[in-house]
Amino acid sequence: SNVSPIDDRPIITTSSGSVDETDFSSGDNSTSGTVSVNYGNDGPGQLVPNGTVTITCNSVAGGALRTGGADITITQTTDGYIGTVDGTSPVVTAFEFVIDSQTGEYTYTQFVPFDHSDTSDPNEEICIDFGLVAIDADGDRTSTTVLIEVFDDAPELSDQDNVGIDESDIDGTSESVS
Image 1 (tube, helix red, strand yellow):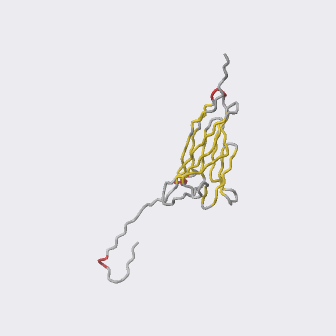
Image 2: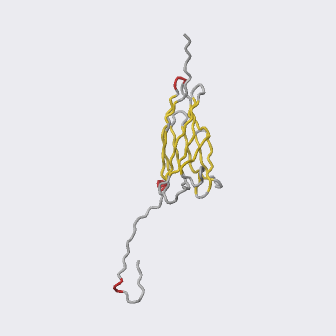
Image 3: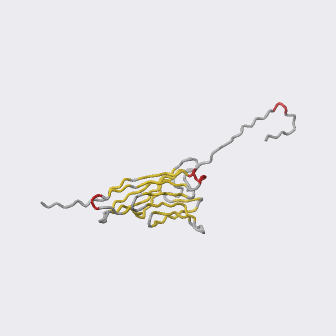
């Protein structure tokens, strides 16, 4: 009997994470997780960036990222992606997405807030899909993305004072309230 081995492709379990720009007050803003890959009978390979990053949801730049009105350029690195703010010297890093090609563990770290499209929504999200490809030992490929949701920050009111004025003693001279 003629039996041929099945040449299977990597099977990926996707992952996602989120950061909230409100957390910048405590330093860098980051999230991490793991993309699981079953390389099947062909044996382990690697999980690497595939050059595609898609910005969806509520970016003020409609499919791109900005911070403080400046564009953010996204560049693929050997182990992920980096976003830098255009026109800055020295270069300001907006974010880094780093993935371990063997374990699938990733970390997204954001260093500056993004410009969101709806300034009245205190938690509006911008969605960033980082493209990856799993390549097994004999070269079969399966693509996936890691979704990172970036929630907007919002001003918070605190220590509101209620002030009352007693008008019964008004005699025509001015009174001040402190």
